[in-house]
Structures are given as C-alpha cells and as structure tokens.
Length: 257
Image 1 (cartoon, rainbow, N blue to C red):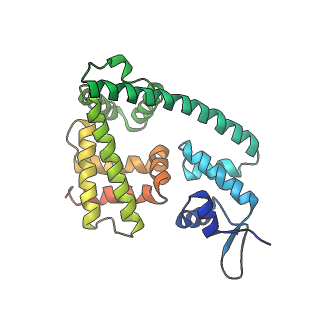
Image 2 (tube, rainbow, N blue to C red):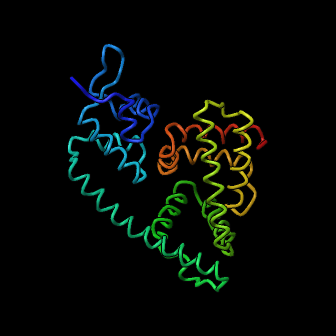
Image 3 (cartoon, rainbow, N blue to C red):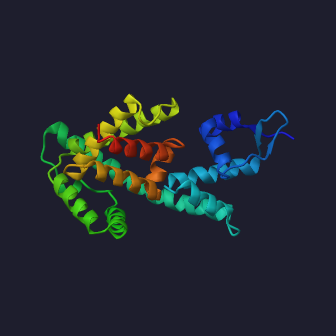
C-alpha cells in the first residue's frame, strides 16, 4: 500500500512531527491510513494538501481558515496555486524594495551620512497597516485609536537602530517562548515569567506609555481573538498562540510580577 510515515513527511517538508500530529488532531491534515502498528501513512493527496497548508500559512491565514478553504466543495488546487504565485510575486517585489531600503540605510549609517527621510520607509505597506489599525479601532473602540496615536507619536523620533532593536527583542522573546513550549514549561514557570516581564516592557515601549495589568490581559485577549496574531505565533510553532496568551494572562493576574 505504501505511503510516507509521519517521520518521513516531517523530514521532507520541514514540518515537525508534533505539528503534523496537531494537524491530524484538528482535522487539517489526516493521514491516508493508519497501519496496524499505529503508524500514520501519507500519500500523494496528503502531500499536496500539506503544500497548500504551508502556502496559506505563508499568507498569514489561521489554521481554522485554512481548513475551511481546503474543505470547501469548490476548492480548486491548481487555481489556488496560481493565486499563491501571484501573491508571492507581489510580495517578492515588496521585499526587494525593503532590501533596498535596508541597504540604503546601512550605507548612510556606515558613512555617518544624512539619511534621506522619505527613502527610509520605501517598501512598507502603509495601506495594510492603516487597514489593520481601522479594524482594531472598530473592534476595540475609541480607546484603541488613542493608544495607536500615542504609540505613533512615541515612534516619531526613533532612529533605524531603535526599530531594529525592537524587532530583535520581539524575535528573542518569541524564540524563548517557543523553546519554553517545546520543553513543556508551565506558563507560570520562572523562565516564562522572565520572558513575560520582557514582553511587558516591549509592549510598553511600543505603546509609548505604561501598561497596566488589566491592559496587558486585554492585549492577551486581543491576541486570542485576532487571526493575524494567531497565525503569526502558529507559524513559528504549533500551540504557541495559546501558550502566549495563557502566559500573558497569568502574568497579568499575578500583578505583572
């Protein structure tokens, strides 16, 4: 009967065995069959479905949305691939502009030359950011607009190295949380609490103001309700979105300490 074992599929795709088990459990990617020995076996259709899952993940969709798309009666695999190609080409063009922006900024920094302010932000998707901000305000009310305005004012005089430092800290926190999840640490473990302390400080810097326990818990609830945040964390590691929101909630309940 043949087929690839879950271990072999993990090796081919770069998706962990744990994640494949998770996809099976939520009905996103079922094996073609399960042998008498309990092993999962995947055939051609399953390999193609996993490819679609990964393409949709690259586009930022949540696992629930991906399952609904792939299971819809009118789903056309070839049409989906053509659409993925179109979106990836557009994204490649945007990322090339971002690379030029990085190169130009680095060159100016290394020469200690004046920065061309209008060129510092080429490639960033202002339209997408504006749409996201409008959605946040619609969902969470006028106080969200006040928070966005305050955060934008705080970033007005950031230098390129300030942006880079904030991005590096975000990456370090998320990598630490992924490791904590993979090693089975509870969300109130000292190591996780230390990461939450850093995350709280990171949020405060981005918001340009103090972040109360209630506000931090509210942010965790927003993470849990927003597909983009869910997709962001799940793209890094299956289960990380829930782990992150639980850790934030527990940290807030403990008085941010």
